[in-house]
Image (cartoon, rainbow, N blue to C red; front, side):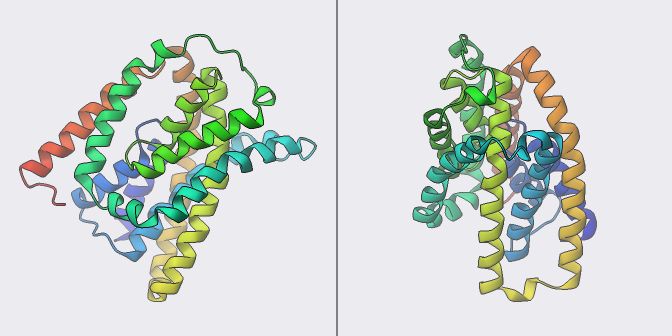
Length: 266
């Protein structure tokens, strides 16, 4: 991976992390198109820049994250995180295999898109309109939805948790914001685990050039994500999910077509 390639991937990550279109799928699809080959460093890079993008949430919602009087806020995030940690530990081999299967990811993109076409009709009577009104039970069940994105790469973590929030009768904005908040401890845990695994198995990747790409990519992903969050919240409140559904179906179908004609290889 070159510095230019790392910046392209970081821009893609920053744009897609908070949209319900799967940043993982977009990075996995973009890699072969721009000549990036999967290896220990690229796997680490994709996790770390996701964390960098998600840290934009901490900046934009700093009052929420640093209001230490509201211990319940942090407790709800911990409760919501537990299902994904358990799934990640127990099903690591399955997850790794699916992350390397572009055809599977493309199909999940399409399936997720079809689901998003109908989400606005399914959840029309929200009763929870603030983060303070989210209960521990709501948080845990939203965390269970996050597990679906762990089991099915390409589903989108944000899509799964937002849908989980809507099912728990959160309104669109509250569901999206809780999804953002939950992403912070989720990706922190994933990044720590990824650093540990790579350092243990492939310590040679921690060289100066790679670390430079990590730093530059993280900064780019963070800055782009700041803009993407603002856009998504505004758009979601006004228009809902249907456009994202159509986009997912088109993107997943295009990838399957490119694989069929041999432009992208598994």
